[in-house]
Image 1 (cartoon, rainbow, N blue to C red):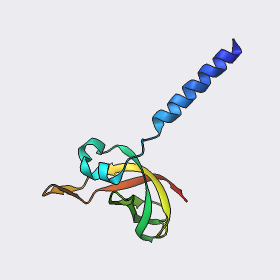
Image 2: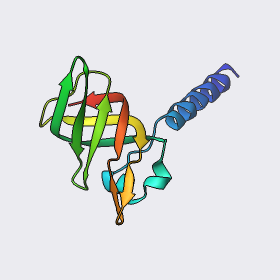
Image 3: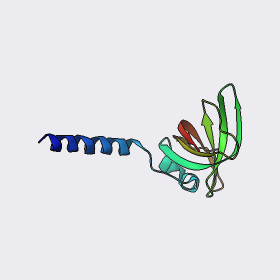
Length: 113
């Protein structure tokens, strides 16, 4: 009986944990269908191609082989060439001529390799 309760609690915890993590998304998916991701948390992996920061804030550009996007952060920026997994809120920019300009991710969490 205790084992079944323990197993049920483990499954419930795992389900809640997996629901809280956003699904990995490519930059091409974000820029190709920005309406679908507007104001939602996303997870992207890529290589830092540019970064600018001062006083613990800044932005860095991620390239995941499908495209590039800027990530705005409230903490230090990773260096050029770093492999980064960024979780954050997708901010849609201006759409003009069928292209999405100025989209970014407001970072909530980051994993660096």
